[in-house]
Length: 132
Image 1 (cartoon, one colour):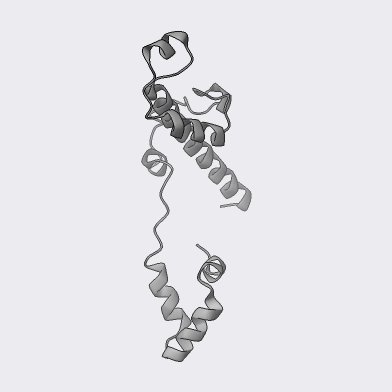
Image 2: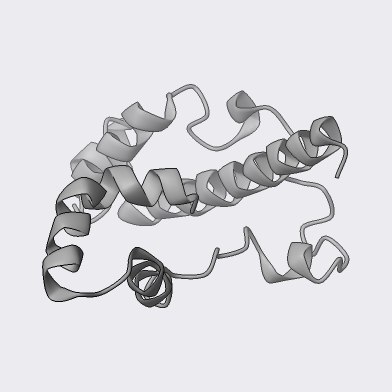
């Protein structure tokens, strides 16, 4: 997290005033705050460790190729919330009007993995453009 982001998040001018009154420095304050900022979580350990893709490239696809891929991420998240723990009746299942919760949960797992892979690809592109 950049210092300017921390400044905005923590209302630094007000904090500076309080620190001045207490006789403490801003640098000491920043060092203490940074101890509590979590480390960045990797998209996946195998990516972080430059390991082999355990999914054999199956997430290197378009969103529309995923289960329930016709829905936007926001639509899908809402539907998953509404149906992920709701057992339909046998009549609804036979009529094809409802899906079992495992269908929603599996599609959710696939979407999260796909989004994680897309995030990784974008991070790599940003690094490439920055010349890192």
